[in-house]
Image 1: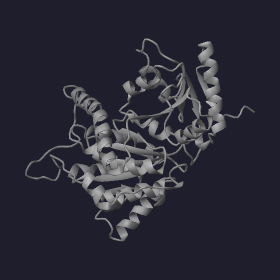
Image 2 (image 1 turned 45 degrees about the vertical axis):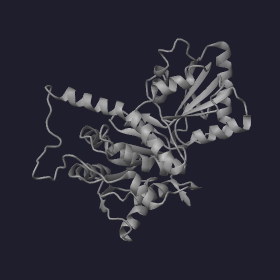
Image 3 (image 1 turned 90 degrees about the vertical axis):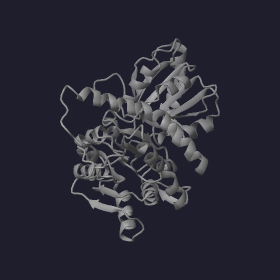
Image 4 (image 1 turned 180 degrees about the vertical axis):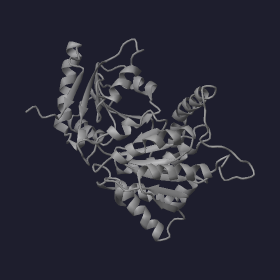
Amino acid sequence: MALNGAEAIAEAMRQINPDVVASYPITPQTIIVERFSEFVADGLVDTEFVAAESEHSALSASIGAAAAGGRSMTATSSQGFALMWEMLYIAAAMRLPIVMAVANRALSGPINIHCDHSDSMGGRDSGWIQLYSENVQEAYDNTVLAVKIAERQNVRLPVMVCMDGFTTSHAVERVDVLDDDVVKKFVGEYHIDHPLLDVNQPVSYGPLALPEYYFELKMQQIDAMTNAKPVIEQVSRAYGSISGRSYGLVEPYNMEKAERAIVILGSTAGTAKSLLDDLNDPRLGLLKIRAFRPFPAAEIAANLRKCKAVAVLDRAASYGSIGGPVFSEVRAALYDESKRPQIVSYIYGLGGRDTTTDMLKTVYDDLDTIAKTGKPDPVQRFLGLRED
């Protein structure tokens, strides 16, 4: 089936048939909710579609629906994501397994409708699981996987399914779509132990928690995120048995003998793979991070510890830091290694700036120099930035 990324996510949502979808359209996410609303209008799903007046309301409605006992989903991007900010933390703290598609887009200002990861990276510590998609197929697969991961009893956390705005959300690719009944059986029925609407067993959601209890509640969220790592792997293996496509927390590419490697999230991993295929050099590798939350520190260290030099590419800036957010965490993951590679940070692709194979080739060339000199100086660099 030929679909763009937004259509692929909408198709997965149709097959999942959630109880409630609440959303407010924003470019480049709009196609997702437009297409899904057509499914609702045509009677192809049983979903209650809530056309909210803002993204804050959309996530609030999703939270209410999930607490009431329904499987709920939503979608957003950029400033819409930012407007959800308060409710991101509420959803995670209530341990509600909401699935949200994020068509990654730069945050204002200045106004920019194109892709970078500054929106979802800003929410990385809100308590949501984050899955990043390289292409349209992964956007579809991640949406189906996300439901199963979010609803696992020892996880019960909301999940963001991220894809690069326009690059993936509007790019048409061939997608292998599972049969409806296969997806329905895989995700199963949604069950919540203590729904808000069970009047025979009344419960409270969103209570006041002062110093006597707040810390312990946060610890439960930390434990749930820890539990999510093996669950993501287990669910991915189960998905592989029905689809032939199995995913891990990270995806190594040409890493068996790699001495120099790039670490990256999202669609630019595909550009790097194309370059590596052309270069056919076993000394050059790629490590794609699929799950940024929970952060796969051990898996990253295992893949990179034998490298001489590593470049971490961030499509978001961390103002005042020594590198991008992914760089900081990858470097921390390698801190305890007795022999660790030299690591350099590249900020790239902000606001939709193209990143070509020629640009990525310069990164590998830089890594060759760094490996020889042992000096990643400067540590923070910028890829594709005009100098005039």
